[in-house]
Length: 108
Image (cartoon, rainbow, N blue to C red; front, side, top):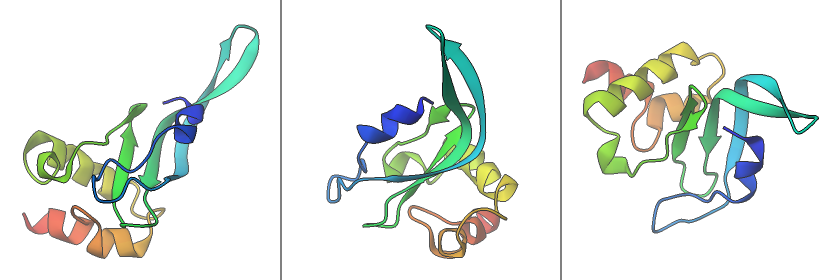
């Protein structure tokens, strides 16, 4: 994911649409037209207004609606993301994250 995308992204929840925050867990640098640009491989996008979180997995910001994240393959991938980075993810997301947290993911 290109870091400049954070300038144009907003919370996808229709009742929120707030600005988002990004914590980068893993990145690399690519040369584009002679300039070094940071590419985000793994990270956490959070909405300070509504408390939702969105992972960046393999360079892709996973910003699907809640109903597409709470079960199935997407849920499993995001639960693995939470487990992999739990030492760097805020406790409130792990316990009470929207649409789910790590505790909820492990009991499903």
